[in-house]
Image 1 (tube, helix red, strand yellow):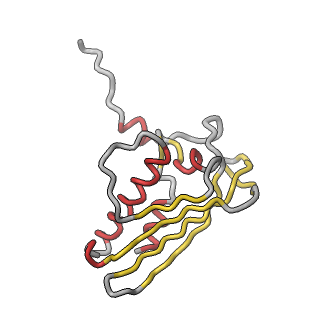
Image 2 (cartoon, rainbow, N blue to C red):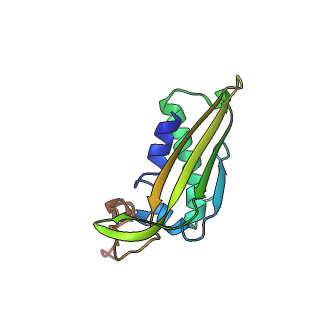
Length: 148
């Protein structure tokens, strides 16, 4: 379940206004720790707020798919860490400077068993000139009403 969570969360499906969410975070990120069992009530206004809320929501979604009840998980944390130094990697056929982000998740069950997984992903800072915007962004916005 943790592997599925990381794969879903760190994927292109985590977006902000149609662009990959983590490109907005990587320039200023040191480490972000998220309590995956905490639920925020407000709508996210920034990429950072969206990253936190999306992590909790995607964790909950993967728990449901694995048929795990919230009562079976005592604690669950995600740490996103920008690793030191620059790396070069691909962005839509262009080589760009960026960073490696480590996504590490840890969950402790009600029986005290601890599970951990991690994944390292190349992330370049957001650049609308190189990135392709997801069609989900335009689909989620209502079409203007010109009938009036």
